[in-house]
Image 1 (cartoon, one colour):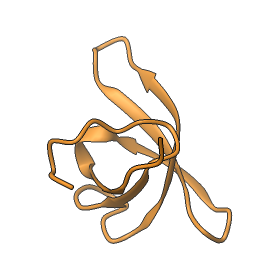
Image 2: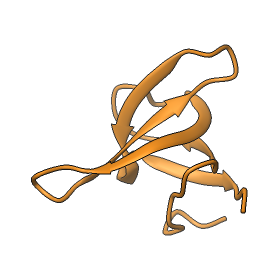
Image 3: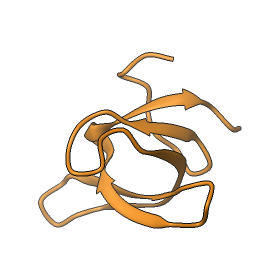
Length: 64
């Protein structure tokens, strides 16, 4: 996948920038903030959840 791929619910992602860089998981709960930025909740394999901006992730596996 490319860095420009659109993140969708259920896609497997790697966080490449920001506070959570180096973590990975499944994208859930996509939301557009009041300022227009796309935020996502990433659920790791061990169940830990965290929020990050979609621009900080790279899609590695698309689930459609």
